[in-house]
Amino acid sequence: MKRWTIVLGMLVTFLFAGALYAENKGAAKIELKGATKNAVQFEHAKHQGFEGATCKKCHHKDDAGKEQACRKCHTDASDVKVKDAMHKACQGCHKDLEKAGKKAGPTMKCGDCHK
Image (cartoon, rainbow, N blue to C red):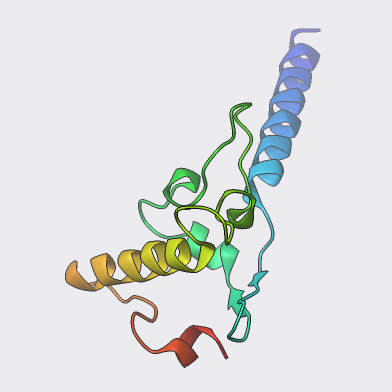
């Protein structure tokens, strides 16, 4: 009986942890549509694997605590446009990584992201 209780407990823990991980992982690739330039094919899964990467670094939450898509808050009418928010976040992070001596993504050329 004791063994079954342990096995059942491990199974429930495994399923619960797996569900939380899958829910928070998000899509492996995301297309970020630009208003005037080609869309950016963003490797979401690749970025999640970086040292020190957290969801909070890129995602804001609404009042209910749910993560929001960039364009939900960063609109053409908002103080911080989506283009400016993305450029600051993406380029800023890449530049910080380069300063730390780590390999980073594009920082300056439009065509490096907007292919």
